Image 1: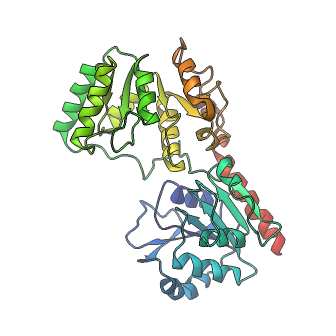
Image 2: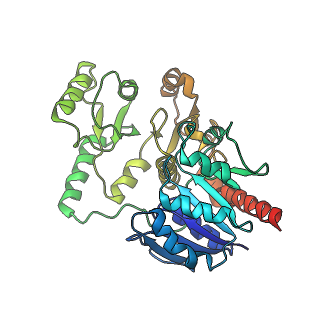
Length: 377
């Protein structure tokens, strides 16, 4: 097994589970991150919270100590389409040592990288590159890759279905708020079949496709907007209520608000489907909703772009519903006319009998590691 340094600005649902998984496969792992970051347990991982500003000069001070461990793989996780000075220093040092494999994992790659973007040069110099979906990986076409043997793979955020997660929502400490929330549920959702649709909108616009789809769904079934509108301007809140009222949908919707874990579970367990299709979500957000849907056994409605994240899990119209993104609105109408919103197969049942399904992306990363290491021997 290899000595791996993971470079991540934060302990996230991508970076830390990756470190834990690599350690579980007997790799020797060093986790390099920002000051103030913490992990519940090191689990045999050398945890180094060193960087304050992630500057070039901070990296220069760390380099002698860091590379005294003689790492074989430097794995940089890039959260946005930008680099900082520390990333550049670490990557440059790794490329100056022919026995170190430089690996880059992109978390957000929504569009092709422009010329002059430092991330473009990092990818061109990397021995291994991963993206969270096949669609994102396709955006790397046309780059001037230095190595003709560069390995590429799909590495989505981890789905930790079996262990307690650092990123679970904390229980409410406000008992009174929880009692109010429970009364709200019993009043609105008792014996009413409903869909759950995440809401990340910051204001209301009747022309927004998101709200047009909310109205379409509400015409068929009650809809729970999973989120809150309390940060919206007061005018936007009133306009949304009036807009729904004008369509005779005033009693067909509600916001969930912030929920304690037990009520979130109740909401999703009793819902007809969790509809994600058409909502712009990051790979981390998509993965978190996947995890909730699997744990609480609510059927998922995805669009074809979202289904490319953890694509190995999904079988169209067998364990989830997948709507084609270009014809989403028409297919959504057809979906809402279904008599049964439960897919023929349960993904959770498949996972309980075959745990290796969720290990597929990590196994692919290990193959990329092994192949790259073999090429330098």
